[in-house]
Length: 327
Image (cartoon, rainbow, N blue to C red; front, side, top):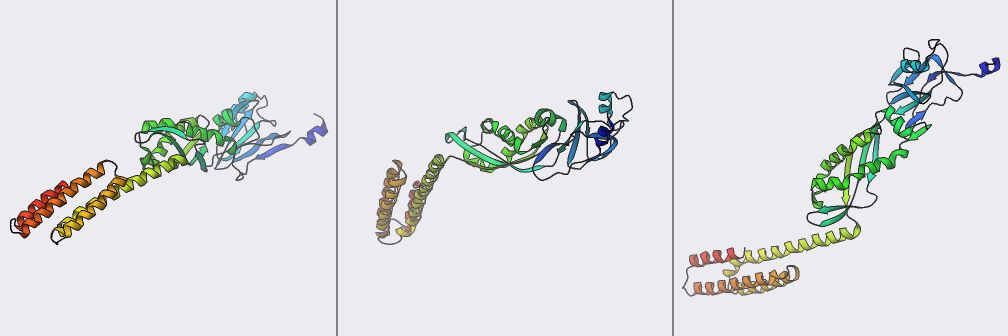
């Protein structure tokens, strides 16, 4: 090397990386023509790991702390180099820094609905979404399988792969769980845990650790949601029919004590029958007809009480028997 070339030669004394909040997962130290000075200082912060790569071979991994680079701290690199001068001269290797910070509030979701078989609704097209958090835990595996020799590798470069990994097993997971669609919301925590356990090994293959996963919502496509809303509304109308029948049945004892009350109550059953026909289908008219017969019987019995043929106690006993038939 000429004197001019030697003077221009630059030696690195301190290697460090100050992270910015831009989602960087891996960053290669800009070496250019520089060489690392023997005895240089390597600073690795608490949220980082550093990796030395020499001629394509991973040499050493450094955890958090301040390290003096020498044969004592770079045994693998020294062995790869086979230096005769006991590491007395400067050297040049690629140095990669990795962020091990927790990557929070990452979102996942089904790009298209997934089809599950539900015991109550049959085949259902379902959407789901939520959040997850992960961190880089194995820089060697991540370097070999994901980031490679790139100068910069960010979390956005990885986002699509991770989302697809999480969603890939959803259909099978729902099928194995056997949870009805209407009960999914009550089991979100359990399903989130099951998803995390299923996806964790796939994250580990990339050198990542899946820390948490949360299912925030399940939903149906708009047209199916409208159908479900209609079904819920019909269920509410069914409850209205039963409520109307209960109200009419409850009023019979008072009506029996008042002259003309049972006749008015019969008109009430006519209204109940109208409600039953509109919301209860073919079974409602039959139920209303049975109620009319009971009202007619009570009228006759009440008339016999007035004539002294039946005692009040006998009427009350028969009335209780007839009311039981109303259910």
